[in-house]
Length: 266
Length: 133
Image (tube, rainbow over all chains, first blue to last red; front, top):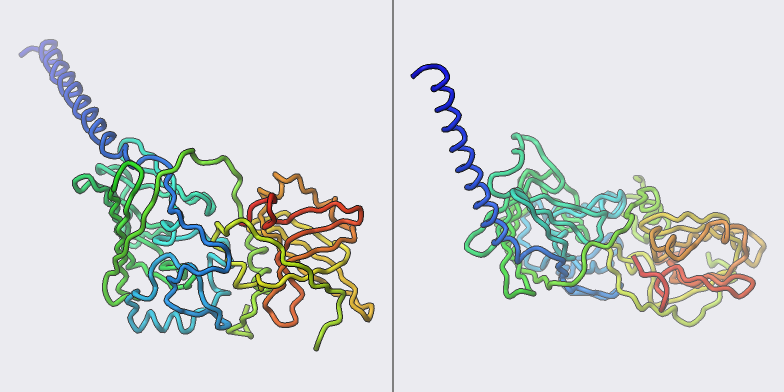
């Protein structure tokens, strides 16, 4: 085959590959869109608890001055803490809590308690918390996104999503150590071994059940599974300026919190 | 030591809005009690999670004590309500709110601010007021 003819054939083959490849990518994108579409929207957990009232899910655990802890994000009475986990709770105090005293964002699974806004594009699903410092998670799908290195950790971990039938399943790991990482009201930590699996199951067009499995062999004797519900709401993310002054957060602890577990520390 | 301050017990400040945020006022403040203080606003910062005010209150012996007031709403709502710190600083006001659980503490979560001219400002948690954060 002579030079120009060779080039022409190569060009035709390349063009054919591009057309087929593009069509295949478009078909994948359409399929991905159809599957994720029912999950897109504004979801609310419908949990409204007036201040001081108790959902009864902190398992009777108490805080630094013996106060009953309220409104934990998971059923603490069933949380399978191992001896290291129990030791953490025995010695932890609120002044070291990053969420309470340092304006830290909520972590998983506590983030899921309040609902969220779900949107998507090819290869990724975006989930935004409704209020907490505009926490936004990216869930990579269809092999998209970067891959963390061994030893590379993030507060909200690295999330990969896939479909299992019609259920959307998210698996998240590569978490940093987080002193509030299992629950920020309980002040129960999570380690770099934490793995959170969320299975989003549509009950109907307006209701989701999320089955959450928490694993962390540093603090838990076995994986722990529970479920929450979200309901679909109208409206989108309201525009707002969300900020937090860590000094103000810590000052309130210092002058208004009655407990002082470690008086010689700050 | 019992403090002798110009504290008047008033009717409970009605709280209509649920607590959406992850802050639990009840852990820090006795939400079943309301107290009222009167003093001069020394400073007022519009910050989140909660705006904070310092009020100088004279006790019965004439000694000045600083009260720290935590507004029940944050900076975004404060600015939406049109609060300007210069409208508060230097004014002698009455403030009603829920006192700290810390024994002997001079702090509260508020509540209602009443100015000498009768103007009332809600710092969060009042019917029709800005939402609690």
